Amino acid sequence: MTAGVTWGAAAALAVLAGLSLFTGVIGLAPGDLLADPEALGLLLVSRLPRTLAVILTGASMAVAGLIMQMLVRNRFVEPTTAGTGQGAALGILLVTLLWPEAPILARMIAASVAALLATAGFLLLVRRLPPTEPLLVPLVAIVYGSILGAVVAFIGYRLDLLQYVEVWMNGEFSGVILGRYELLWASGVLAALAYLVADRFAIVGLGRETSVSLGLDYDRVVLLGLLIVSTVSALTVVTVGMIPFVGIVVPNVASRLMGDNLRATLPGVALLGALFVLACDLLGRVIRHPYEIPVGTVFGVLGAVVFLVLLHGRPARAG
Amino acid sequence: MAGRPVLDKRLLALGLVLTLLCAAFLTLGARGDWGFVLAYRGTKLAALLLVGVAVAVATVLFQTVSGNRILTPSIMGFDALFVLLQTSLVFALGGVGAAALPAALRFCLEFGLLLGGALLLFGTLLGSGRTDLHRMVLTGIILGVLFRSLAGFLQRLIDPNDFVVVQASSFASFGAVDGDLLGLAAGLSTLALLGTWSLRHRLDVLALGRDHAISLGVDHRRSVLLVLVLVAALVSVSTALVGPVTFFGLLVSALAHLVMRTHRHASLLPAAALVAGIVLVGGQLVVERLLGLAATLSVVVEFLGGLAFLYLVLRRPVR
Image (tube, rainbow over all chains, first blue to last red; front, side):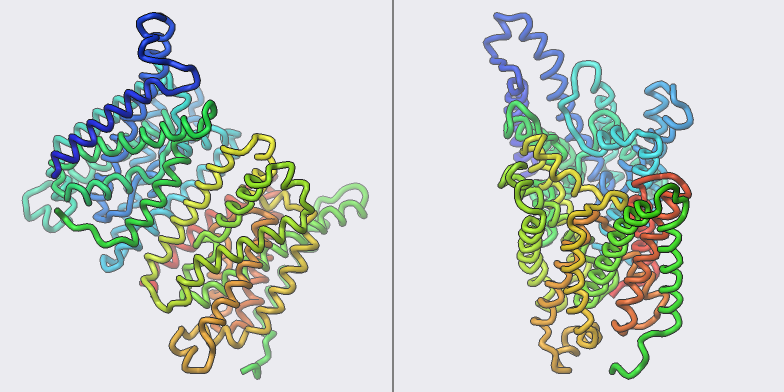
């Protein structure tokens, strides 16, 4: 079952990626590539980077969501709603305030560190919640995220950077061209790293006592997970902006299709994430051609509907 | 039940503070023609007070029928629904068509739609007795996200010129209230407030919970629907005037409970209204006049309201 879903997702992703290469404002058909050198340039400078950016973002955000759910031990949590993304935005704002001419690497590090602190704060908050009330966790997550969001909006307003904040908060791929998305490869690498240590995250998901009695260095794995989640979120926020619900919807759908054997399902989760986000991006490009609807908005609508179904549907069963 | 005097010292104190703040708001830092200054600031003050009272009363009413203190109409997505309806109206009629409608007619249309939507969504949810509280809150929040995303989606589909018509109403701003609607809004909220006041004793009974209310002879389902109508009216007033504010109502109601320490609506409702006025007028005074930060009060209020929410949730297990 797991392998079937994974291969099916891979095949669908390949088809959509092909479509994505030839969908856009300027008409481009596969035949043009041979005849017209400019067509090839368009493909390499705009269409291919965009498609890759979508795939990398979707895959890494889905994996980050899954890891976060293991760390918090709750299925309805993800980085963009639980303050990680807002923390990253806060980090960039503070760097802009304190060190305006900072190089991009320094900004990235600041964003990641701030995202890490914000997520760690959320973990500490969640530890105080009674374990008998699982739905309290996403509730607190959303409020925590919006408190940080209010701080970001306030500072952004003071610095006249509100427009940037809007860009960070609303995921969109229309600005992606060659040379402006390469940071996302780093999140791809981090997602792959997560695959290598997937088993440890699965054990962390069983709780602290169980992890320790199984001989796992619990705090170290939690820290690694936090690092991956925060860095992936920070990279995404800086390059394309936040896409809500990817981290919740994709792991939950994947868990229903493939069960919860993390090592086996993680590639499927990444592929499904890429597939969902690419489908939404394509939809946003096609609905009102030649204008575009940001992928964050499309995913916000569809993701919210799926989330509601998940919330009210039968509880997931490991299969 | 109405034996005890309603006007206790705390209410008088709150009223006094509010009066002082209003006087300061009207006169502080005024230069030039007093007639103009008073008329200009008077309109603003009236709008702030109206919004405060509407949000406060709507929140207390909603918390009474839902039987807990962390639910508010805005957290459950009422405001977002209103913005979505406004956007859909512009989408359906076109910007010119919507602008050509008299403001009063348009407002009534939006109010009617909100009433229908609210009864449909929350009438069934609240009327059918106790459900899983956290699931309900989470559903409400996600519905809010869904409504906002849908509104954003429609805003992308409509003409940029038409967009201006809706843009003003989708972001909360206490600084720029819509003066045209003030008279109509005042009329509608006066009606709603009179209705609420006449229900105050029945509300005390409703607050005991569905079973107790029924055994005490209150038609629970009808009363809940009636209260929802009042809430919808008050929410339309506040959202039409300043736009959506998620946590303001929660903050105000929490403060009112803190000050009054009673469940009697005859004291609670006026207290909440007065606290709301104090927060808005005082906040506007401090943020706009003293700190010179126009239009950021909504952000500050969201921040404080979010903290109040976390405090309420973390302090003790919520019923």
